[in-house]
Each structure stands twice: as C-alpha cells, then as structure tokens.
Image 1 (tube, one colour):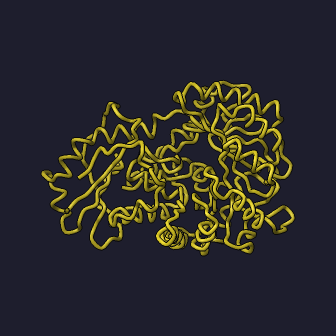
Image 2 (tube, one colour):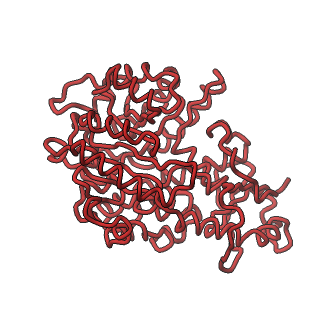
Image 3 (tube, helix red, strand yellow):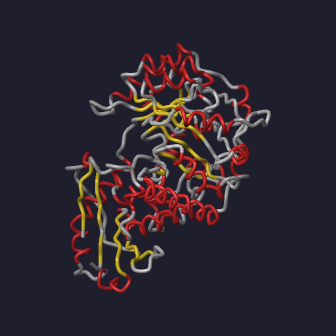
Length: 469
C-alpha cells in the first residue's frame, strides 16, 4: 500500500455540522523513517503516512487520499473547531492550601506562599464545593460527574477539610488528589481508596540521591524518596493511581531507570512531564530540548520493552495523549497540548481564599486572577480579561507556530511559561523541539504498527473510525 491514514473520533462528536476553509494543503514531513514520510494538513490535524517513492503520486489530485480527504475535510475541521473552542467546563483544580512542607526547586508557587500561606477552612471548603456542584452540573452530561482535583502546594496539610469535602460530596464529584506522599499514612490511604479518589504521587528519581536533587524539605533533609516508595507499595493494585515525574537537568539522564523502577513496582500509569518554566527557579533546571529528547524517547522505548518482557503495561500518559492527538484528536484525555489549552475553558483553578485562576500554574501570578468563587459569577470570571488571555491564546497566531505542520499536536504549551519566560501569550511555550521529536516518534510508531503498546487498553472503546485509506 503506497498510502495509509486512519482517524478516529470520539463517539460524542457524531452528527455535528461542519464549516471549513479551502484545501487541501498538505505538508510533507520527514519523520525519520526508512520507508515512510508524514503528510500533514496542519489546519485539520490530518495526517497520512506515504511511501517516499510514491509521494508525487499521492499528492496528485486524482489519488485516493486526496479524493477521500476532500470528502471528509469539513468533518475534520469541525472536529478540531469543537475541540479547540467548543468544550465547556468539567473540572476544577482545587488548592485547599497555599502551604507545602517541601521546597522543590522548580515549584510554580512562590516561596513565601508555600512557607507561610493560608489554609481554606472546612466550612468554606464545603461551601466552595457546593457552589462548584451547582455550576458544573449545568455543563456535565447526565450520568457523569465533574472532576475536582485537590492540588498544591500540598493538600494533605489541610487533610481534615479535604477529607470532609470528599465525604460530603462523594456522589457529586469524581475526586482526585495530587500529593508529595510525605504526609500519607495507612489511615489516609485507606480513606482515599475507600472513597475511590484518584491519587497522584510525585517521584523524580530511581534512587534517593536523584530525587533529593529537586524534591527536598525546607531544611534540605532527605527522606522524600523512601516515603514515596512506601506509598507506591501501599497503593499496589489500586486502579486510580499514577506517578508524576518532572524531567529536569538533574534527572533526565535516568528517565529510563525511573520507568524501570515504576514498572517493577507495578505502577500502571505515569507521566514524564518536562519541567514547567513559569517561575525562575524552574528555568535553572530546564534541560535543553535536544538533550532531553534523547533520554525521553529512550524512556518511552523502555516502557514498551518491559511490557513485551512481562505482559504488563506502564503507560506514559502524556505521550499517550500526543499519540491520541494524532490518531483520534477528540479522544485525548489531557488538554495541555492543544491550543487554546484547557485552562479557563475546560477547567479552572480555585485558590484557598476562593480566587479563581485559569489553571493552578497561574496561582502565583496575581495578574491572572479573574475573580472570586464566593463573590463573583463564575461565567463572568471565565469571560474576564485574565482568563481570556489564556482561553483565547491561539497557536494559529503565534510566530513561528502558525507555519508549523505539527502545531495542533502540541499547541505551543504552556501559556503560563510562554508569558512569564518568553514574554507574552503571543510567544511559543517551552520545549518546542521536544514536542516535535515526540510527534515524529509517534508517527514512526504508527508506520511500524507499534503504537498500541504505548496506549491505554481499550482506549478506542467509545470511538468510531471516520477515515481510513
């Protein structure tokens, strides 16, 4: 076969009308494969794999690819339009405290806030959840629950209020908690498991000497690494559990070993997140893209090597999301690698005093405060100038992203770091080259029919194939 393409769409997008511009306009992309090139229509995030010696034939007006793409072009355009501009709020990152018991070098929350900030009281937290239930309930379809993720700083510092909120609203929200694990104990883990709370832990090394380079207490004492390993062991077999590793100059060279450790400990889902560079401290440990890419792709390959040996998957969720962004754009689970991103659009963040921000990444940036949960109408907040700076940030208007064939597979993230590190919302985000390497790698996997090993099982359960050549 000289050409191949396959695209799925989430079942919920069936029957939608379409309106697209002129086309088609394809860009050949070298994906580093011996046989195939990528052929991309950037505006619709459409892709095809074409044998290099057949490129001219495929680009001719009478090729099957061209004819079938023209037939589906409006559908693809509408799908991307809905994904980028038509989604409604369904999740909240809830910060119940400004404080943290750790002083991680790359944290996006300012030092003074983490050292001596405020907690949200129990009564106020319950009031906040009640308001969010009313607001999000008008957008979330019947039979589904909106998400509330208790986020940080360190939410376990305000354990009593958080747990009372989970108890009171367990039937209304799908709860999650992101924690550094140092304050977890047997009773806390039992409570979270009993209430089916999603649990995210943070671990940056396969051994303590690596973890302690960036994740440390205020007194620079160790112990963080071993406590996270203890929590991972306690959560063995719990489905709603994942581990986040932040990739920096301190640990990028051991990303494959970190993957090996997590797989050995029966972790099923992890994230390898390049450090967010919103605040200056994070930029001090930002790796160069080309250096991080080498280790990053090696870690992805390691995850599948281990799967092939043992039959157990460790899915790297943020790379899986990029794969889904290619194969089935509307099926992606994370909304950071799309433009506009999900901030202020699909989700927003609540600070301990009720202030609202487009995302937790902005909580340390007062000029991105859009209003207050207890004082303002949430719809008005989502239309406020600070929120619109994020929710209207459009990769199609950012130079040089607007000429990039891969722009809808990465979205030029993250708006917080673009604004704070690169000078404005009209600037690219960090790690452009890393995303480019991931997309090319993903297309090579598809060309070799290896991509399923990097994806969640049954990822396409609720999807339908709408294009195949």
